[in-house]
Image (cartoon, rainbow, N blue to C red; front, side, top):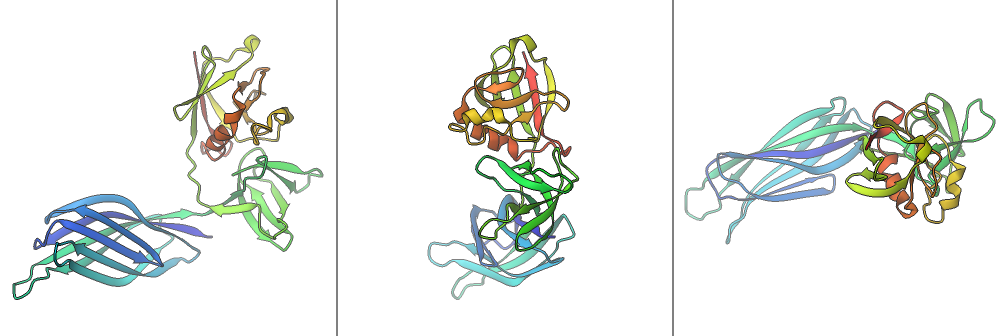
Length: 318
């Protein structure tokens, strides 16, 4: 399994003699360069949380050459310390910390030279790469599900487990959504690339609020005009928002303004009520501003609650 290594600068500890406060750190690894400048005093430790680099690997032990330079910047001569070594990371561990000591000697002529010690602490995070459905022109990918005669559609960013590939097809297991647990296949593109992407996605739950009285939907502090169905008013409470189940024909009328208009999100797990775009409602929450639906789509489609079914939570208020 391919994993992603995220290497972060955690802190810099400055001890020994004082050679100055204007410190610059440079790190090079596998062709990627990182540098940061900070005022740090001797006897202190400066905390950071900066990404040095990200690396994909399928090896159990990841090894690479790393070059660390610490520079104290002076008006005339810089004081420089350099460490060339090898970084070694066990990808079976989710998190680990590495420390490297760099000695920096003050540059002076005919004067006793001060020596400073800098300990560079690096934090390592290991993330598993996942396969997921890529974004198509309408947000849906048609696939063949084993044992089902007609083609079914899967939504963008749906997690799958790639089983095998040949020159014509990819074979996989669906890991979430309404078809989870089923095996399926999909034809490869004309250029022989796959509709299944590989990468790391941040899967935080979407938090959405709907006001019955104002008919306003709020996502990430942005408000959208909506309508509902007066005879079937929504009740205040908290509802799950599901991963999209199938293309909805009702969205076809609005694809000139929203290319993902056929992607609807069911609210709750047992009712036929959805969050979608359009002009009318028969009980759903309908976003009237179709030009903003694609924006809403991207905020919801990647999100996950963590139950294998939902993208997030809708809170209905008065």
